[in-house]
Length: 171
Image (cartoon, rainbow, N blue to C red):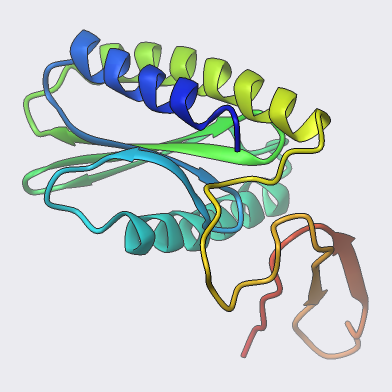
């Protein structure tokens, strides 16, 4: 993706603006790393976990009629993991120390998410594939995928299909 150096630049600028950040990652909504600055954290694993968390968060906002996904914040004993929507097909995940000012984290994360979304969406509009070229068994990011949801409970056998969302199964 030609926008990759610009996305990485934005991640570096973000980390300079918020010194308590310990990592920043831009990924496609399906878990493909676009750019990262995550010392000590494996970026492919973080991107995959981000995609999984994004799926749950998007389903929660849908189920509670809160609209489209915007952001997710997780707090652990040692810090925060924040994920922000970045355009139509990407997300920004930030790792921060426990002492970060959460308001500042949100302010800067939202701004960077918007900027990264603009860069990724522009690259996509130009027909560029998402992410750096790599040899893997994954389907290309532009390949159509579907998610099937079945309502639970007796008599609720409705199934809906949404285009371009990761395939999931419920048990």
